[in-house]
Image 1 (tube, rainbow, N blue to C red):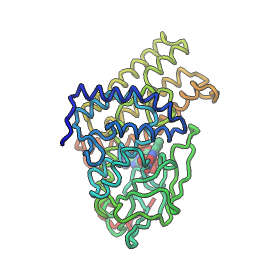
Image 2 (cartoon, rainbow, N blue to C red):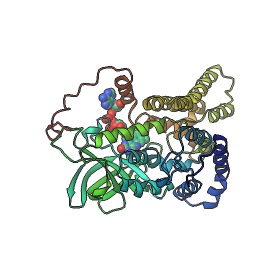
Image 3 (tube, helix red, strand yellow):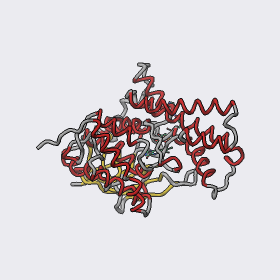
Image 4 (cartoon, protein in one colour):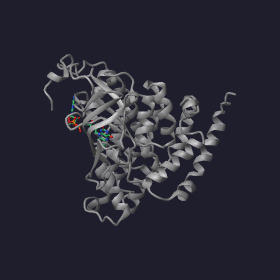
Length: 395
Ligand SMILES: Cc1cc2nc3c(=O)[nH]c(=O)nc-3n(C[C@H](O)[C@H](O)[C@H](O)COP(=O)(O)OP(=O)(O)OC[C@H]3O[C@@H](n4cnc5c(N)ncnc54)[C@H](O)[C@@H]3O)c2cc1C
C-alpha cells in the first residue's frame, strides 16, 4: 500500500519532534565526533527523514520540493555540527549517483549513504589541476573486472575519516582533455590508497593528500559511462555549490570549529558587547551589513538561483563576518591564547574564511561561470579543447 503523504503541517510537526530529541541522542552517544555523526544520521534515517526527496526503494521518502523546504527551514538552525561529516556524501556524491548511477550502484550505495554507514570524500583536485580540473592526470586502466588507479589528489576534505571517495580519473589520454575522463566510486580502505593529512593555518587538518598506487575499483563502480565523466563531474560541482551556498546558521554550530559557515550575526553582536563597542558607529554599520547578508543567504536558496551565486554570496558573508570579528578582537585576534575558547573560536574563523573562497571552486571561477552561463558572455578561449590530452603541455 502506498504511504500517505503527510500535509505540510503534519510533516513540520514530525521534523520538529525529531530535532527536539537530537540533543539527548547526542549526549547519550558520547564518543568521538564521528561516532556521534553516525548515530545522528542513523536516527535521522530511522525516522524517515534522511532522504526526503529520494525514492522509497533507496531509503527515501519520495516527497516533493515543498516538503523538502519545510525540512530545510526547520533543520537548518537545529542540525548538529556532526552533520557536516556527511556533507560530501549527502550534498554531492549521492545526488549524482541518483541521477547517473546504474540501478545496482544506486541500490548498493544510496540507502547506506543516507543512513551514514559510509562517509564520503571528493577526489577531484590534483597538484596540477584545480580550477583547470579537466587537466587532471590521475589515471585509471581496466584490468579484468577491476580498474587500476594511480595518481595523486590533494585538498581532499575529510579523507582521513572516509570509507568511499567519488573520484574522477583519466581513462583515455588520446581524447581531448574533457572527453577521456570517467567517474568512479573508490573504496578508501585498501592497500593502494594512502591518506596524508595537511595541517592548515587554523591548526586543524581538515584536508589531505591522497596517493593512489595501483588502487583497485570494481568495474561496476563506474558512475555513468566510461570516458563520459566530465558532465557528471560538473553536475556534482553544481550540487556542491548548492550545498555550500545554503545558509546554515546552526544553533549548535555557533561555537563549532568545523565546516565552512560564516560566523552567525548573533555571535558577532555578543562579541561587540564584550568589546564594549555596540555603540561604536563604524561597528554598528558593519554589524548591520552582516545582518543583511545573513538574511539574504536563505532567500537566495529559496529563489533557487544559479548555484554559483549562493556560493559566492556565502563566501563574501564569511569574509565580512570574520573581518568584523577580527576588528572586535583587537590584538587578541592576532596573538590569542589557545586556552581562551572564545578567542580561539573567532581566530579559527578569521583564518578559515580565506579557504571558503577556494573550496568548491574559487571566486574567480564562479564569476567566470556566471559570466558565461548566466550573462551569456563569450566563453574563455580554450585552444586545447580539441587536442588529444597526451599532446598537451601539463602544469
Ligand atoms: C577548504 C578547502 C576544501 C577543499 N576540499 C576539496 C575536496 O574535498 N576535494 C577536492 O577535490 N578539492 C578540494 N579543495 C580544492 C579546491 O577545489 C581548489 O583549491 C580550487 O578548485 C582551486 O584550485 P587550486 O587550489 O589548484 O588553485 P588554482 O586553480 O591554481 O588557482 C590559483 C588562482 O588562479 C585563479 N584562476 C585560475 N584559473 C582562472 C581563470 N580561468 N580565470 C580567472 N582566475 C583563475 C584562481 O581563482 C586562484 O585565485 C578544497 C579547497 C579548500 C580551500
